[in-house]
Structure formats: structure tokens, C-alpha cells
Length: 216
Ligand code: URA
Image (cartoon, rainbow, N blue to C red; front, side):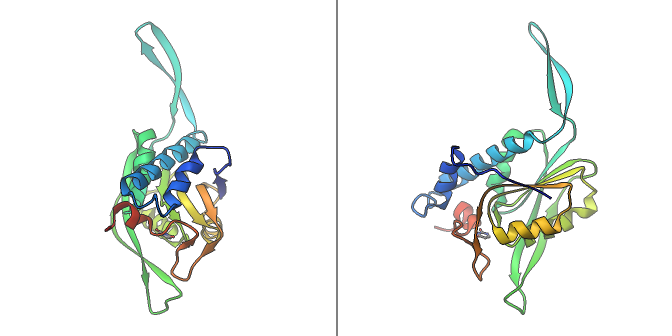
């Protein structure tokens, strides 16, 4: 797997990440969602530079211009519900993409040390030969990302796979690195050191789904 940590010290991306982490700013849920969306737009642009393109032309009122368009169909898949603002950001750039949604939540089984991932809802077009972009804003253990990918297998084999996260724990990054093949890229905006015993990223930002869509 190829890991692309796109955080740098000299980019406006840092402001968006700082705002979603900051407990005094993140309470503004509209700003939180918009910041995640803006990060999705930046990640989308970074991914776009790694895709392959085919040459085509467009007619302007004054002549013909040569341009380049993605040479495979793109499917954006997001894990509900926290993935929705990130999905919107990606869709702002890949506006011709097809869309897939999956619900996956973490469930403590008998052993509270382990989380079982339960998949309940799945809507997905064919993935055969397409570029799959799979978005989950918080890459904690990496188990949801893998469970989602496994659940998508009956829909066909993508040409390439791009996993997108806003904040990951090093443990989650290591997990996906071990469990996804060479045809997979991980694009991530920030990597934190730790996970706590409830599976939250430390320092992270808290619960992304609640911040975007939860009760006040
Ligand atoms: N999901 C979240 O929303 N936050 C975390 O820290 C981990 C998973």
C-alpha cells in the first residue's frame, strides 16, 4: 500500500484541521461539517494528481482546446454517518462520480477489547474496473475501513483503490498498510500517536459523527 500523509506546515489545510480539533470551534456544527468538506476537497485534489487521464478536446466559441479527463469511472463510497461531509467535499471535485454508501458501526462483543464491525446498509454500483475512493474521516483501528472494503467485494474488482481519512491513529495506518495490497493508496491529512481503550484517537477531535450530526 502507498501512504500519502498530505499534512505540511505551510498550507491552509492546517487551519481547517485545527478548527475541527479545537473544542471551542468544533461545537459550531455547520463550521465543522464545512471544514471536513474543505479537507475532502483538498484530499480530492491531491488524489486527482495520481489518476490517469485521457486526452480529449472541447469546442470553445473561438476554436478547439485540448484537455485531459479521468480515464476510468470513479465511485465515491462513504461510511455513514460521519463520512457524509467528507463525501460532499470529494463530490465537489469528482462531480461525475457514482456514489456508494455503507453503514458500519463498532459493536463491543463479549470481549470489550475487540470491536466487531456491523454492516447494516449498503448501496453500491458496479465497481468492476473503476477507481474506488473509500472515505472514512477517522481512521482509528482501521477495522471499519477493512470491513467496508470486504463488504464491497461482491460489486466487482476496482482498478485502483484510494482510502481517504482526515485524522488517523498510527495504529490504524499500520493496520491498513498491512491489510490492503499494492493497488491501494491511503490519503490522510493528519496522523496522531494514540488510540484510547474506547477506540478514540488521541488527541484526535472526539466523535466526528456527533460533531457533524449529533445532539447539542
Ligand atoms: N471515530 C471518531 O469519530 N473519533 C475517533 O476518535 C475514532 C473513531
